[in-house]
Image (tube, rainbow, N blue to C red; front, side):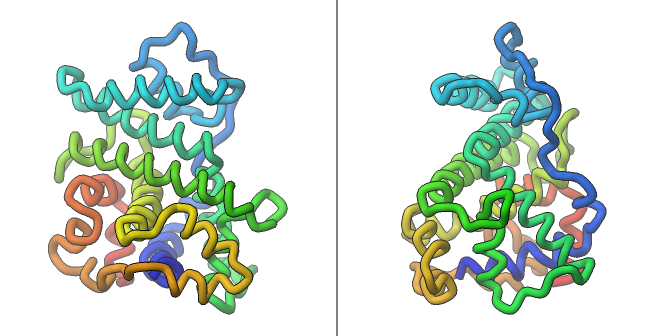
Amino acid sequence: ILGPGILVLIIPFLMSCEELFTTNIFDNLDNLDLSNMSTEEQAVAVLDDASGAIDGLSGDEIDDLVDDLTDLANDTSAGDSTRMQAAAAAAEVEMAASGADETINNLSDLVTDMVNDDLTVDDPTDILTSIFSDSSGNLLSAAEIEAQLEAMLAAAALLETYGSVMGEDGTAPPGVSADTLAVTALVVGLVGILSDGGNSTAAIAAAITDPDPETAIDNLNGTFPDLNALTADGGLEALFGADMANTIEGGSLITSLLDQM
C-alpha cells in the first residue's frame, strides 16, 4: 500500500545519496521569457529553470507550453536528444505548475533530516503526510494534494515517453539530470500504480488528509507488487513497465537502491 510502498522503495535510495540533497532538486533562477523561443529552445530553458519559465504565465499558457513540448516529444522526425529534452521539460512544467516539485523537495529535505538524526519518524504515514505540506510544514488541503497527484500522473506519462525514446542503454541528453529524473520517476510511478489499482486521485488525497491517515491509506484499493522483486533481473520493468524502468535506470544512483534492497 501507498505509505510503506513509498518508504521501502524511496527512503533507502535517498539515504544512500545524501549529496543529492545539498540543494533543492528544482532550482529557482530569474524569470524566463519563452515568447520568442522555438519549442526546442523552450525545452532547454524549462530544464534550466521550470519555475522561472512558467512564472507569470496563465493556466492556458502553461497548458499550451505542455502541449507544444509533448508534441515535440512525440515527433518521431525530431532527434532523440531533442525529444527526450522535450519530454523531461513537459514533466517538469506539470510538476512545477501544481507544486508537486516542492513535494519532491520536501521528501529530499525530510530524508536529509533523518540522515542527520534531526528527525525521528514514529509512523510511516508521517512521511507521506509530511511531504504534502507547505513551507510552514502544514498539511496541504485535499484539493491541493489532488492537483499534485494529477500532475504526477501527467508527468508519469511523459517520463514513460522519455524512457521509450532513450531505450534500455541510452543516456540523458544535455540539461537533464538523470538522477533527479529517476527520483521523480520513482515517485510518480508509484502514484501511477496506486491509480491503476482503481483509486481516484481524489480518494488518495482524501486518505492522506484523513484524521487517521494510516488507516485510510491502508484501506485504499490494491497493493504494490513485492518490492523485493526489484533485486531480480527485470524487477523494475515488472513493477513500472519497460519505458518507466528505462527512465529510472537512467540514473546511476539506482545501483545504491538495489544494493540496499
